[in-house]
Length: 527
Image 1 (cartoon, one colour):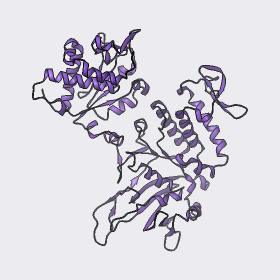
Image 2 (image 1 turned 60 degrees about the vertical axis):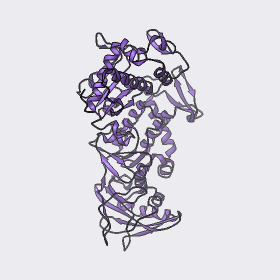
Image 3 (image 1 turned 180 degrees about the vertical axis):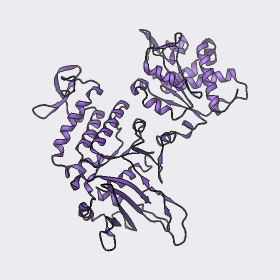
Image 4 (image 1 turned 45 degrees about the vertical axis):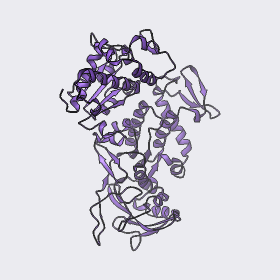
């Protein structure tokens, strides 16, 4: 086995005072340092979630520093309290044998230009220097690269760690003919995925090999669905950004040496959920084939839901620490939802969009006013509306993101527009995704799913109001005004007598009574 193909795997790290992260535990005692918290142990695929500025990129940069030593000068926290130390330990498995790299930073800085630290290596039980430490500062970047390289024969290969977000620097100097290989893989990956891209087709329908290509002058070209008999030139910078992101990430991974380590920050940028799902599946396949260890920072529930927890781990960056989390309600916290979005005592009402929330809140208030006593306070009910988007149910596919995502909170209600896909008298669906969600959420005692009896929720509006903004065409209710749907919903609050509406629409009144009873059940209220 060559040095280049040694199996290198980051086993664990621990740290204190790295940028905003502090993983310490215990009290400060006279003459003693604070004890360092538990090691953060990694697996083959590692996903980091958290708010912006919470430390996701810091974790990725500690990994990237193994190939980009200049990052080391950016890691230490500037202002330390008494007895605080800056430490970073990285345990690396090389051909299944553990080695330790310890970074100890000096608290003495000269402005922002110089941050000294000492570097200690434990390689096969021997030290790099007599004292085990090497001084380094931001002006000696080349020296540290030489140090890494001098350890190469002992297994510490600095080129084994690659960052997609800094790929030009990390690959062009390492892989011969990188640009040509990247371009070849870029076309291959796009052609293999062309059926997932709207607006294009292929001369060779079987394998898609003739969807994307380059003409004799080297120009990028594609076969458009509207012009399927010939290639059409298009500048790569004008390609759909999601296609380009997909092709660049997968091509980057294809160019990596086997047994590498790779970091990717927010791979979901520009990608529709369908392409996010395809991308994470492809990332995992390439990583498996080439034995690549992955570190991914993300805000995407699609990527989280596709994590294989046997081979992967999920971490939550929390500004001052990073914690491993299981596939549970804690995931939503990392994605930016409030506690009331997912705690067991609360509930979530999932609707298509903001206008549905406006209608339902107004109608629920009207129902409560008409059917509860004067001491009842609707505003004290603890529940949230969240939006699943216009066509998300069909986009996500069966047993994928929607069900996995909603099941984080078993106290859930899902409101679905009929769209002529459901016969409420016969209780028959003509659309599988709606049927699946309806059946799933009506199986559990604390969740439910309702489908509107008519085309959409706007169909319940009084005729005189609805016809000012909507028209019926081919048995479909379509917006026929310059107002947005949220503006129309807001106007309905001012102009529609909701209590009278519920009296006239018994089916709507029954549905609201069931929904309110479910919300009250979530809140432990017996009426």
